[in-house]
Figure 1 (cartoon, rainbow, N blue to C red):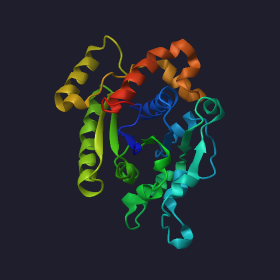
Figure 2 (cartoon, helix red, strand yellow):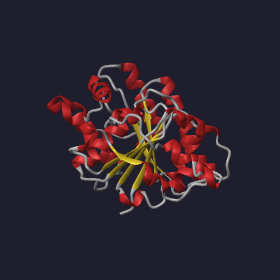
Figure 3 (tube, helix red, strand yellow):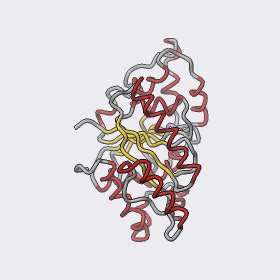
Figure 4 (cartoon, one colour):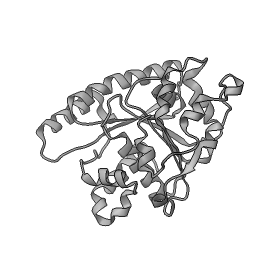
Length: 269
């Protein structure tokens, strides 16, 4: 079966893209035995840090910069040279989990002006994704060139939203961007759905926004949503898998497991 390349995106920051990427990677890898590749396409490099990676020698920025001696041409498959294992805390239980790390200088790629600049990641990944079942791309909180590169390389777009006005409004713009990418750059791009993150029980204002999302987007809003739990932040700060926290992590891992299946459109994961 061909690999699924899932671009996790929303133009607004702080909605939990990193949380979702690392959580899904953990579930797909440990629970389902999938070969998983994480690509951190956000210059803020939160996913890189959450995976326990510091000061990588070769990053996504280097991949997209291209071969300087060949007028910055992208060598097909060059992204494979940037894949490294996750940090020590992840390696024991996740031997087939690879990461392409980010760095701050990745932000300079937003200003690239070379020919076919939207397809540089797609070209760099040629042949590489065949070695993985799932590729998860953590997109930056913008609709710029890095996000377009991710969507052009992806088979699926997965949106993340908080149940609040600014995040919900951002959905409209990212969905419009996806439609433009489908029309002009990647006709095979599918929408995997919308994940509602940071839910708090009993918040009527959040319930209203969830109802609005369901009214606007119907079945694209996936079940279940993810609760707002401190353990997410703890795990990311410590660069640990959620499973490291034992039974206390089940309140997060259980909905993540169900969500992993929902992202797969109800088919066998």
